[in-house]
Length: 158
Image 1 (cartoon, rainbow, N blue to C red):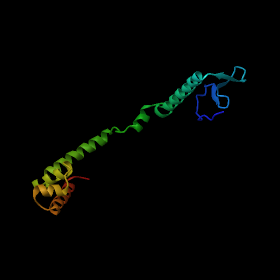
Image 2 (cartoon, helix red, strand yellow):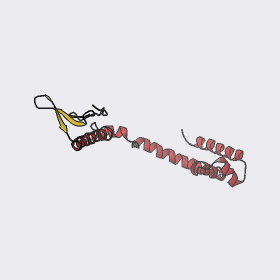
Image 3 (cartoon, helix red, strand yellow):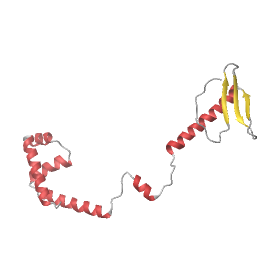
Image 4 (cartoon, rainbow, N blue to C red):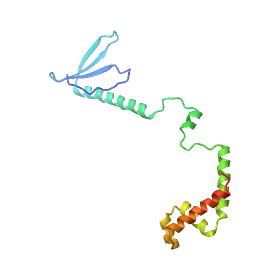
């Protein structure tokens, strides 16, 4: 018999396919109702149809295993899996009040520091880019931003 690739099958798949190379015959084996093994010789087209059915079953099993939910879904399990988890009301209030404090503290900075903080943190510009725009050294920009951060942290209750 020619070696066929070993495939897993549905538990209710009753047949096995064989090809006997020496005799060039195709055989479908199955157990009858009494549990006796039966071997039926079939032509190549029937053998290929059974083979195709087997491959389709395998494809379906893989689809089920890889892409279909196998457990019960409850609200709490969905919440655990959530990518963007909802924020609690308390956290939302704290975040909003912190944001308001930060906004107020930035507003109280000298104009130069305020402009540089905005460019660096909100416009995502590098120290070099800001220095080039304002025609000064990178060190001066860094010093200005560091001082701005110190001023902000004094004004915000952390």
